[in-house]
Image 1: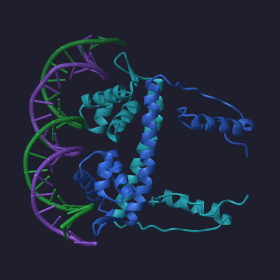
Image 2: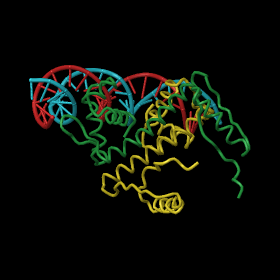
Image 3: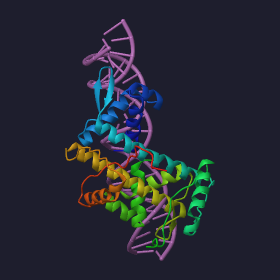
Image 4: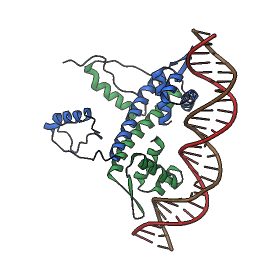
Length: 131
Length: 131
DNA sequence: TAAAAATACTCCATAGGTATTTTAT
DNA sequence: ATAAAATACCTATGGAGTATTTTTA
């Protein structure tokens, strides 16, 4: 399994067609069918069934789609954030605050995300929550 | 960026050495240096600096490590779960329950995970929470 | 001088493309 | 007859290995 195969699979699911997905991805049609077959053979599952001229996704395919999309989203975000660091657009800032400020800080961060700032990483709790 | 490069990077961070990581991964030492250089050049960042005979990770490298580890963990879990489906060991079960049972169900699921069951997917809220 | 990383190269697996065949409307 | 997927085949990129050189404690 690699990100390329998952990317191809996701596009095929979203376009419900090898040809359409191939067009969007700017690759030749056979590559997509091959990538999907590789996943199916590696895992011993069926992701699509041929339905007339097109493809019908299976339950297993749907399960994979949800999780592949999440994984690819994470990979894409990581890629963009690292590129941003490379361009010097960001630095790492560690911010500490107490419970009373959690909501207002969260609001600020959400605003930064909307502004296109590359907000990376998450929260770290350095002391156990009371109780 | 691909999972192979991140896998190599993670191993180098964890072993603080190309040679040691190469030994664990059963690949030749130069491959790891090449993979890391590819990431550095793609993003324009510095992940390690040569420190004496070994390598010293940079702040950027640390940032990448945290996120790469998370991504690789997700990929590994996905891989195992799909393989389990292929072996017929799992089926998809959609379970609905009301708010009062959330805690007890969560506890059961956590127990299943500890038992090694392949618990996949997450929660879906089909109605807005009250208020 | 010993231990680790970096470099130079060769080889091969596989990703990608083109052309064609098969399938179903 | 047409539109889509599947198959066959060829090419080329890049991932892997070996051998060697450079770096530094």
